[in-house]
Image 1 (cartoon, rainbow, N blue to C red):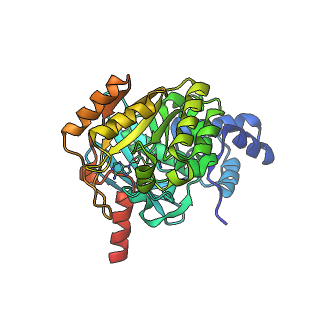
Image 2 (image 1 turned 90 degrees about the vertical axis):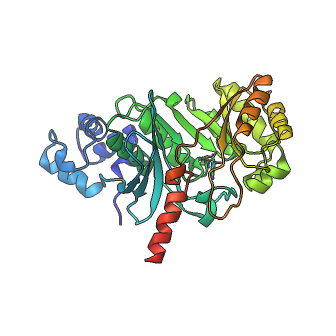
Image 3 (image 1 turned 45 degrees about the vertical axis):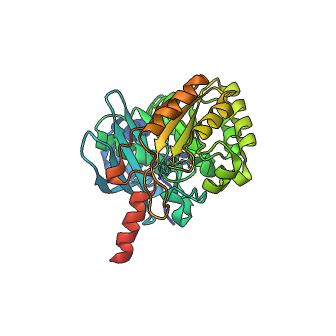
Length: 347
Ligand code: SAH
């Protein structure tokens, strides 16, 4: 049987585990500091613990949550990491440095079962959900590669975070711990394809986490075609949940809108989007489609972004166009894993 990941334990669970092993409570604080202050990767590095205690912990817990299999992209630019997991599977994470922030885009599942037509992650279904420790492990890996502590975490890698709600929330609380990695909740963004029960649950957590909703279409027929999740949670239900979330948390919601030429990028669709979002405290993040194998959609012509921004602005909605930073390294989620599997199959 594989040992549980030590990075998957909340602070309280670590204290409980110590109690169960008859270890004095203050040791839990020391272990936490080694894990998240010093970020050691070996039990033997925990110098102020007696050897017998280190051996006891090593027998009970795994201390290496994830490994770096491959890294693409140059230093100081967007880089993509293929992250190895203990069962031989892999996920992707993306490191996005900017002048004032160092953002890590983490995965929450191996693959995804939501099958949005333009997304590489959903092309071969979901293998499994990640454990909290595997999510925390991605952030520690990013810290090592960035050299500095990541400033922002976005759950926009592979998977649907609300299809793995408990592990994602546990990871958020571990990342947010004031004696640990200390990433403020406002610097953590959970992005959902529109899983209404997840939005409702998150609204009641008492956390100041940012919510991002992938919208991609202003009406049901098109949205259901692009994102099958819309058949289960149509726009009216989704937007009601969003409005309640905004009221309960006093947060502005970010709506992601991937622009696909001739599909969802017309002036009328921009106007419909503005009308739909007007009642909700919202901002819009426009993303030009990143080409994906298996989907023949194209990125919009360059003027489209400005047209959307203008129309949304007239309804008082702030919109930004994401500059595609990762095209050269297949940064749309799931692409690197798809390619690495192909290589594995071809060999
Ligand atoms: N499942 C979650 C988080 C992962 S996807 C969600 O749907 O929000 C992160 C964002 O990238 C989503 O907005 C998704 O729709 C978008 N995306 C996926 N594939 C893309 C592509 N080929 N081009 C542009 N954006 C893409």
